[in-house]
Amino acid sequence: MKLIVGLGNPGTKYDGTRHNVGFEVIDHCQDKLNIALSQNKFKGIYGSAGMGERKIFLLKPLTYMNLSGESVAPLMNFYKMSADDILVVYDDLDLAPGKIRLREKGGAGGHNGMKSLIQHLGTDQFKRIRVGVGRPDPGQAVTDHVLGRFAPAERDEVNKAVEKAADACEAWIDESFNQVMNKYN
Image (cartoon, rainbow, N blue to C red; front, top):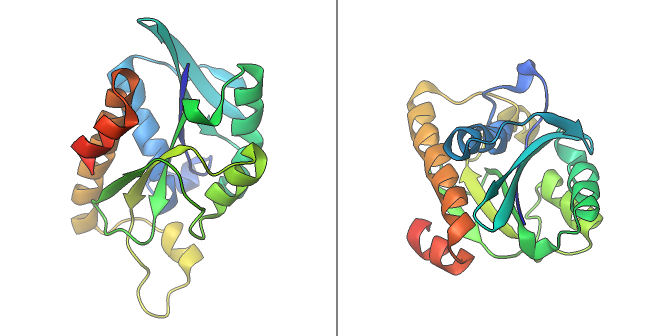
């Protein structure tokens, strides 16, 4: 089994914000993998499909970003998944808009959604794809930045990064994460 989680905030008021690029990647994965997010359970919306010998899950936690672990951990426990079975996609301030970075493990890096996941899973040893959203302008609060929308010039680059991240998620179904990192980093 493999679980791909996109972090974001629920509700239309957050659509298109920097904090919701994880949700955007899951939307692309739905189309690429033909998996409908039709189940509303585990404080999230998810879907699954059999692909070859594997079952693939896509999840959008509906807990708001800071409580993402409250959705991911129960789903993983119910389906008896380990941290090695998951890939988390989320926004990153330290990467420029349009850049992505894949890592096999690591800390939260100040990201509250990742802090929640690490706390609820009891480990930071899980795969992740960070999608760049850039740093706030001087004097702008981080919260205002991540809950804001991209400038039109940034949006084109971010759309490409979201597509590339979705391609990496799809590649992970059949390839080792090391191979995927080599291809997409």
